[in-house]
Amino acid sequence: MERTHKHQLSLENDNDQIQIPLAYRLAHLGIDTLSTRPSMTAGAVAKELDTDWNSIKRKVIKYRIEPEAPSDATGQYVGIEHYPAYVVDLFREERAWYDWYLTLPNRMNTNQIAEAVGRSYGWTKNTVSELYPNIRPQETGHQSYLYPRVAVRTLRDMTMATPPGENWPTMPRLLEFTGHDRDWVLNRLARTTIRPETRREAVTGRDFPHYPPDTFEVLQEFMEQLVEPAGDWLTTNAISVILERSVNWVARHLEASYLDTGEPRLDDMGVERMHYPPSTLLALKSELAQLQSHESAGDWATMTTLEKRLGLRAVTLAKIMQTIGVETEERLDKKGIPRTHFSPGTQIQLAAKALELYGYPEADGWLAFTVAQKIIDKPADWIYKQLRRRGVTPELRLDKGHRVVGHLDPEVVQEIKEFGDTLNAKSRVSVSDIMEITGKSNLWVTRRLEILNAASKNRFSKNNRYVKHYSKSVIAKILAID
Image 1 (cartoon, rainbow, N blue to C red):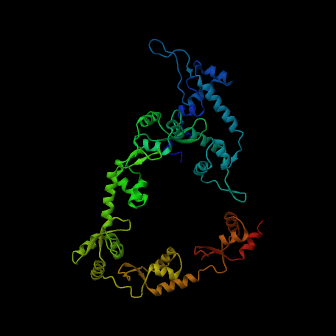
Image 2: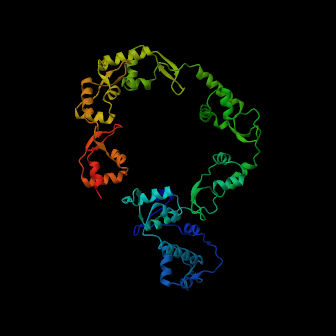
Image 3: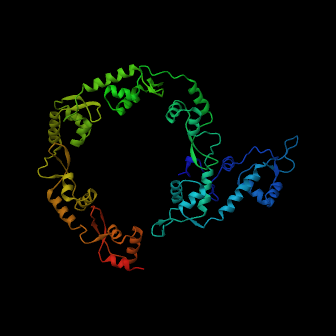
């Protein structure tokens, strides 16, 4: 949200007012600080604006406008303080805005506030909801939030506290300057230290990424560099076709090891694209040949897989491996990366040794949790809750694949299933059911249930959600409420 350090906002302790740098305020209002008019006394400013001197003094303090005063030969100030002539335009703009602000409704919805401050609906909605978290929706048949008018002032101040665009160009301006597309510009800027910064347009009031003024000079240097034809150099897509690998695979390997070998060159259509030399293609061919010399994993397993299957850490498995014969091979994992894999025979020996050392029994009719959940046909968190109520903890046993996983006594599973079956909704209705029957909103239904103080019981809905359900007779009572 823009009220954070992202836009370098700070608040005064006395009135929680956003501090807006004077330069930002003037820039957003389109006021020229280099006015040719002479500086003016507070009295002259007051006369120009048809107000009193004290009012002007308060405003210059509020906006932190430093006065000027003539000094003598010793440097001591003499005479009357003067202020830059632009203060007249500033105070006039601010007064005009405030007069308009007073015409706004005392309570405003999100759309009205967004229009008033010139910001998007999404930004406005997120900002006011954070500023006023306790605002409740109105009873208008749908959720409508009304916020106090002062929200407009707050959001306007937040907007003006964003750095103005000034002479910082946006991307469309850079595209117009270079005559190249967005990718060309971004590709060049990525080779420099130039980074965009979110700033706000003084004219439109909208914020966009802006680039430092010297971006023009940097891009001009790139434009003056001659771009060679591609020749026998290849694009990522061309390499992908030759190697018969996906573009993503090629891009990933280029980025990992060969990004520095690429250069912008002209393709056959005269379009500038990133190309790579023949040597890079040869290197990738070599990598691919090495990968293809490895077999796929098949039923061989990595150490990570063994940890999951046997429920033991790698350091423990390594110690067990020292006591048995281990058969390993470099094979391709699921991502096509060569890794050390252990043979099926080694896996069986490890499981047997783990059973010998740690006493994991066979499943012997006990059910793995995934199987138990299918039988009970209820959400996992609800099943775990029932297990905790019964003081039951899944017991580590070996499944058919000799993996160590939690198993449950089939009698406990059946008991929980029978209990769960008694909690099905049957003839009772949930809030969603009542909404569907009455055609009313969630808010409308829940408020009337609160008025009735309707008794509820948690039951499983059609989509297996464990939520409050009510007697069907409550529908008639709800509709009877005026």
